Amino acid sequence: MASIKISRISEDIKRELAELFRELKDPRISQMLSIIKLNLSNDLSYCKVYVSALEGEEQTVSSVAGLKNAAGYLRRELSGRLHLRKTPELRFVADGSIAYSAHVNRLLEEDKER
Image (cartoon, rainbow, N blue to C red; front, side, top):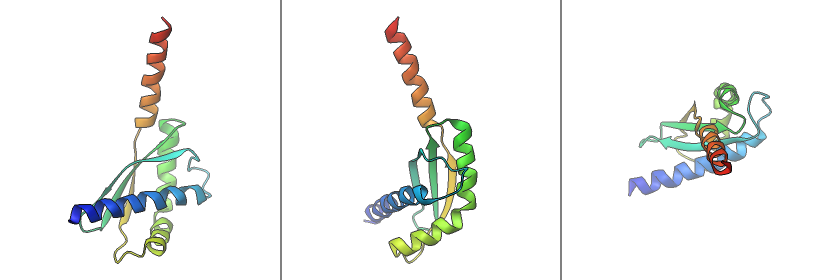
């Protein structure tokens, strides 16, 4: 039963964070930032957010630096929007999976043309 609650809360956090990312005004944070995966601890203390930018790995790393600076603001906004008893501490991790999948797609397209 607890895993259903954790998965529901993590989806709520993912939805709200995606909306909050669009509202941030930091120039380091990419407008094409995607949340790849979200790991929420069982006691709701920590939330590890894996993000990736379409522009590439260096833009993803820059965006993570901006998100780390905005972590307190994001946590406060999540608290107000989700009304959780305990709002998790947010930790952001750069994930290059979107750039990698675009690279693989390009390679497949080149192979098709041959």
